[in-house]
Image 1 (cartoon, one colour):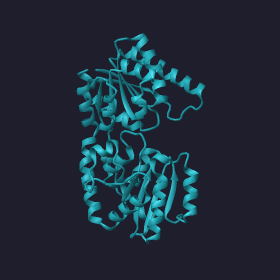
Image 2 (cartoon, rainbow, N blue to C red):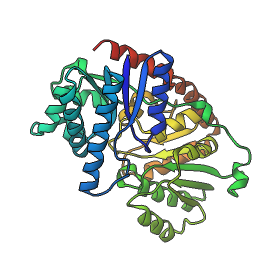
Image 3 (cartoon, rainbow, N blue to C red):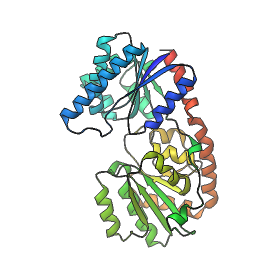
Image 4 (cartoon, rainbow, N blue to C red):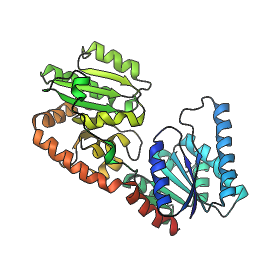
Length: 356
C-alpha cells in the first residue's frame, strides 16, 4: 500500500511515528506530512493559513507518491471538523478515488451525535474509515447510523522498553525512603481533575501520610493550582514542574509509585494512563473510554468517581498501605503493555486498510 500519514508535529508525535515505522516493516510505501496545529499558530487568520498550507502539502505529496490512502491523525470536535472538511475538500477535488482514514484522538459526544452539523455529515460521507480509541466512542459513532464497516477501534502504541527505574531518583529529588511518590501528568484543566488531586493531598497531609506528588503539565489552571497548594500549605509535598517534553517524562513514570488521573476529559486513549501501564505503575483513574476497555480494578488500577477528592484519598490510602497490591498491579500492567506494541496495533490496522 502507498500511505501518506498526516501527523502532528508536537503532541504525541511519537505515537504516529511508531505506526509509520511499523507499516514500513510490513513493506508498505509510507510518506509523512505535517498535520494539525499543536499550538503552532494562534488567531483565526494564522490558523486558517496553516490549515490551507498543510492541506496543499498533503495534496502535493499524495500526488507525488500516488497515494492510495491518506491517514490523518485528528480529533472530532467543532474546530477539527472545520479544519478537516477544508482538507478533505482539497484532497478530494484533485483525486476523487483516494481513500481517507481518520484516527480520532478524542471526540466530543455531542458533536458526533449532532443532527444539524453539516460539516460532520460531509466528513461521514467523504471519509472511508474512522479509527476510534474506545468502545464508548465506537458506540457513539454507531448511534448516528453510520455504516459499522466505517468505524473500527484501535489503540495507541506504547513501548515498555523506554521506562527504566533509576535507583538515584529519590536522592535526586531529596525524597525520603518512607514516602510514597505520587504522579499527575496532564493539562491543568478542570476535566483532568487536577484540583481534586490537590485537595486529596490535603487529606493525606491531615492524616499524617508521608507522600510526595509530582505534577507535570501546565494550562489555564496552573496559577489556581499553585495558589491552592500555597493556601493548603502543601508546598513541601507537591512539586509543580510545568510542561515537560513527553520523552523526558519517562523517568517519572519509571520511578514514581502511583499515577493519579481522575480525568473526565474527552480523550479516547489517555496516554498518561497507558504510559503508566508501560512502566509498571499502579494507577488511580476514572472508568471511562480506553481505560474502561483495558483496565480491571485491583488488577491494573483502582477506579475513582469524578470530582471526589475523598474517593481519591481513600484509594491512595489503599495502595499506600498495601505494597503487595502495588507490586501485583505493576506486574499486571507490564504484561498488559505487550498488547500495545506498534507491531501489534499496525498488524490489526493493516487488516482494516486492506479490506475497505
